[in-house]
Length: 220
Ligand code: 3PG
Image (cartoon, rainbow, N blue to C red; front, side, top):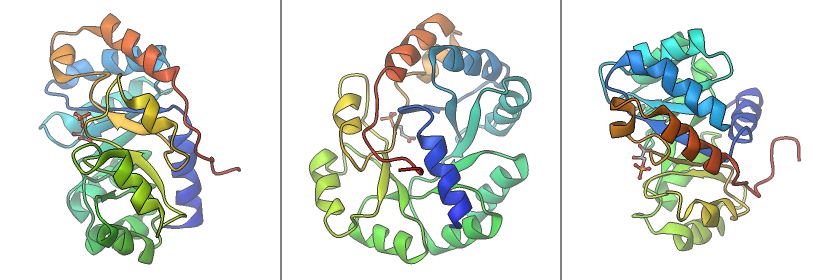
């Protein structure tokens, strides 16, 4: 990843402590959802490519909610990454890592956080120049003890842990000096999106936005 994309990714992760991970079934929900998240103080939003509506939802938010910083998640192939680039997404996230994905991310210069779970995954990432990663699935893959262990051989790596993180444990993750931000679906779970429960989502966003990360930013 270029220095510019790396700095952009760190800046994006510094915007808010929590990145809501969104699975959206109906693109017409995208704009009110993004407005609720932004109003609650969480402008950085990951739209997962898990539904047919995902790209249209991301496009609508980018067009109508300029305060939102839209990333594409569940990027599995170089083709997914190219779609995110073409869309003009601010960043992309994958649940795992392949050399093909890292090569594609470097070519399109999109700020990209590949998913890691093991030391082998981290070797793949750092040898391709990617040292800001998604730790996924963070809790099932060993939680903070696993993150501490991985930090030994890879002291330069910064993490966005996702998977099993919620209101009850986010603060512990954010207290870790290598954690730049956390991701999770708890702020805007799909049933709340489907039922247009915007006030409840905004309230959870506000609580999440009040949490803080201790990780150094691009400028420190
Ligand atoms: C992800 O897609 O990044 C995770 O599935 C979100 O995990 P969570 O639902 O446990 O927050």
